[in-house]
Amino acid sequence: YKDITTTIPGYGTVKKDYITSYDYPDSGHSLDYKRGLIKNAYYKDTSQNTKMQEDYGYSFSELPGFSNPNVSGVSNLVNVNVTLDGLKTITDYDYNSKNGLVSKIIEYEGDNRITIINYSYETQSEMENKNMLSQIGEVKIYKNNLSSLQAKSKVFYNNNFGNTNQWYP
Image (cartoon, rainbow, N blue to C red):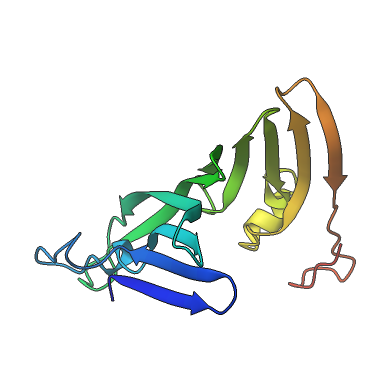
């Protein structure tokens, strides 16, 4: 599929365009990690006037050391641009280089909102030793710049069971 249009009775239509093999044809190894991702979404009312549009941007990375031609890379969402009734909102994403998960979200709309996500393994090395890399340790939300903290949430994980893989917040 390249695009899919869905009709919603009483509202209008939603058309979504996807990245396909036409965009990234195979070149000796699989590029499936670049395919099937949404490129655009168009929301139209019953008169077919565009009410909202979403545009998605991605980064692609080859995985080193994989000899399997079917496993060759990773795709990350790096930005989403949303236009709603003529107003544009841009959201950018940065990723943690060790676990590949989102570490920073910046939303540009009037006042900027910056969300910083730290993972528990960054402060609790024993979690890293157990390859527990996805547990969120702290989230900070700022307005406009990193000196205007709006909200903060912190979780400390504990392992009172000794040398086991059982951890709890």
